[in-house]
Length: 309
Image 1: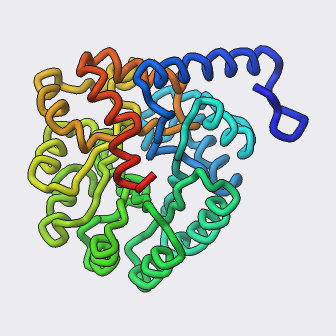
Image 2 (image 1 turned 30 degrees about the vertical axis):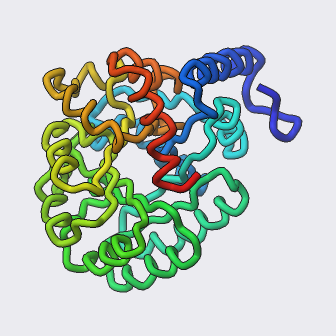
């Protein structure tokens, strides 16, 4: 892959490997007759924050389930964006999230600037249950945020906390989707699992929640919430890959339900924080055998419709 600015941290062998993978990814979506991919779960955040995340993965911290988790794409920010473009990803996100009060407004400012610099990034914002959250969420929406990220596991908060109810209401009214990590994988948190999210949806049934990682490992419970609430969607992030199937396999008896929700399943990858090549996520979806129409919807059309691309 050609360097973005004339230099690159990648050696020649890595460049060749990325070029080969980009060709393979493009063949995948070309076979489906798509104009490219839309990935609703990619991570861009301030570099020092991202490096802290990478350090946590390298140390096999408890929230990773203690798993060995080598990061596949450690390039600099501009190079990582260039990798997605080389793959033919038409639109992506800058999933970022606070782990304590006071972080979200600063992260939202950074994300707004990143989206301005990268028009193919869907302007992303985040939130945390704290005083003032409704105000800064409304400000982010008015500034053009098109998707929010919430991380119940890392943030260690109850999504049904009264402090955040007004913010959920703002997002439901504005019809802005929220990608939310609320399942108990790869390790459970104090407030992960379907029950807290069911309480949120009971109060805000029109909230456009996108359950990250298909809600692993509570896959069937979250499929049930999607069947109950028309605005609930799920993203495929890391699901069905060899890595995830090794410790949190998707129940095969639930595949017909997944197929039936094909209009509300969205491609997510977790790029760059994945321990395998990006193309493996696509092959993992293809080998489910749910057919090209399902794949076209998941890999592009559902998200393109949701975000008006």
